[in-house]
Length: 96
Image (tube, rainbow, N blue to C red; front, side):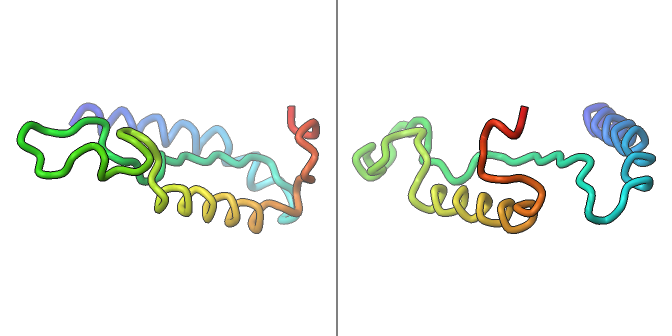
């Protein structure tokens, strides 16, 4: 319960801080992008005792991103490029 209150309090602080910046900018001006993403699909990090599947079932190895996870990461990148591509170029030195 205390953890939920702490998370909500932090979220409220972030929203309050950036509220004025967002309201004062034009629709074609990007002020802040804050993205939180959990890792994509991974294979298990270890097998439980008496697991009928062996580690060889996971082609990528234990604890590694699966093929589905790689597609998920690629799809997220495509979405972000489509959503924010007009604000930045492909030049990595542009972002500091």
